[in-house]
Image (cartoon, rainbow, N blue to C red; front, side, top):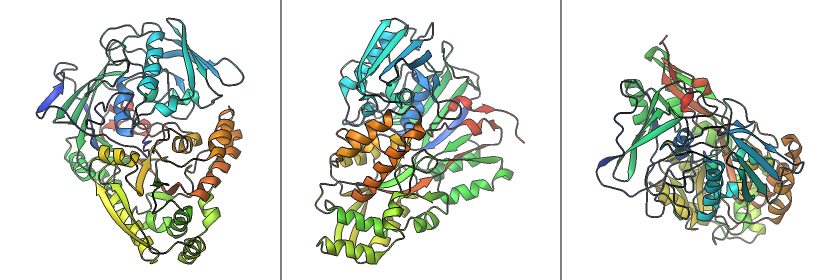
Length: 535
């Protein structure tokens, strides 16, 4: 996600400087009392990224949470669990033993929200369009394994893969594979602005102020045909500057639900807010936080510098002092709970040791203190990010081996663009999974078109381990390949894992379905939310 997280995130801006709506939000669902979801994030449009809700550009958890409700995919993640189930498709499956040909049959009578019929040719158009646009910020790498798409009939789609990929069905559940209308979305360029035309369980209308979304209104789609059963008629998503203002709105009763970006203090406070008519749902989380390196930057190009950082950083202190144990130390890019996880960084570096780091730098003939700027986004991952970065700065600088300054960037899109352009030596990132598989914590960060635009390359991971793991339909059998990849990353340190988060959803106590509000990839399932009777 955002990857989520990616760990993953919001976008940034350019449109009319007055409060406007992409079509009026009045009319649809009149008289229905909507469930109101508050999110602490910003979704904007900029010259560099003008289409924050176009599947070809959008690659963050917040945009995907909107798109999942309005755009259909052939497959989707189930209410709970990780095995994909049909969505726009009636059935899908591999048609060979090598996992190289994947065939889907569409449901009958599918329509876009504008009334246009949805056929297999629209699926092909959507996939081909994603690959043709090939947006640098977008999720096109998720589909780079597709060789070609064929449509034997209006209801049949056949994907021919370049190499076997057992994770392909899960990739078809992501908005990267969302089906769009060729009569609306341009073939070779982005669909700028905030309009969305899809065939999902909801239609949506967007309100914006200047270049930024302020509210999205989701109304149950009367022509929807798919596997989702919506438990409400209407949902509003309102956008706040931070989690503090979001929580105030929840306690006041002006919103019904909030998730993401909760500080440890907020989590503790909300745990004890039952008497205030609020309940907090805790769920296992696959969000991770990590440091990313520009391995060509002179300050950190020598892997001994990155290894020394790995020897110093104290994850337990970070989780205790910054996050009040609302997370766990992470010693691999693959989080615990997924097949193939191994504590590679702990196995290699052990407990934090300034003496070991000093030896590493000395043997590499690196003069200390090593100077660079650690950059972070101030509002994308929650209010605790600044405290986390200051704690990392303190841990490294007090050894006298590093002299690190820190810099916060307010705009997520600016942060993302500058990171991709190689302007940062080291930067703090989060990742929410696109799919709940260890592959999604390794493959997106390695290779020519990696998510970070990182110059780091490793032939064994790219050419051997990832392809080998994708041949395994039994994901337990792929574990050995993932473990080797994690050990290589721990040695080269192009990425430095920090912690693994938990997921929380807070709501007024008349809201039902909280236990199903997030899927196994931490995606928000607004259709599961209902309104019952308060205790």
